[in-house]
Image 1 (cartoon, rainbow, N blue to C red):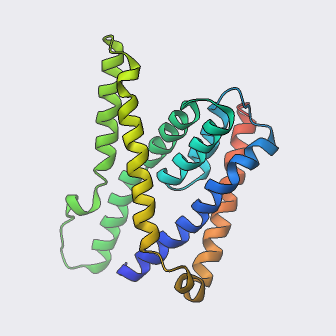
Image 2: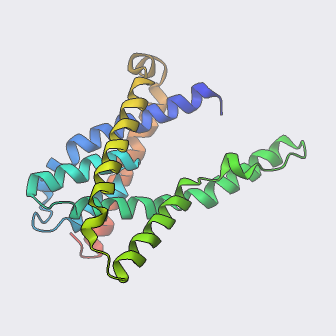
Image 3: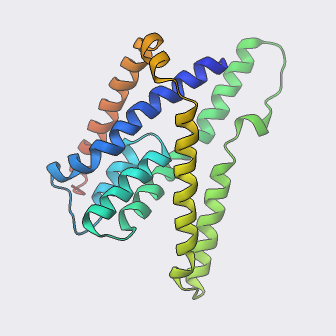
Length: 200
């Protein structure tokens, strides 16, 4: 994809993620999600919002609204990043088909197509699990959680500074419509599955 297409895709995704981060905590309350536990809303945010930073924003808002410390945030980010693992096979398969379509005998550059941040997520999860298992106090990781929130806010600002909303609305009618349809479908499917599994 061209740089402009990539920018447009990101802008559409973030447009609906921003709306979700603002609306979902209120929606969760109206739908009757438990306010004593962040599990149901955390799973909802982690499955229905398409970007980790927006998942963090929605889950943190829920934690703040109902004084749950970081229970919702922990659940939401874990669900979202587990879901993100699907990027690995999808990216590799799409890269393979793209190269096959070009028929130029190109090789896949793993550094360009592999989402290495997933490896860092898995490593961080292993370190935390092992550390707590051997007796390290979980409060030791609190500063890292605060730092991660700061960096996520920073990334949101950076993406916002590179997004031209006027240009997106002028030239992106079909992508916005597609994004809206996908957003509604994913939200409804998330709620349906949680209801079927008895989480909500």
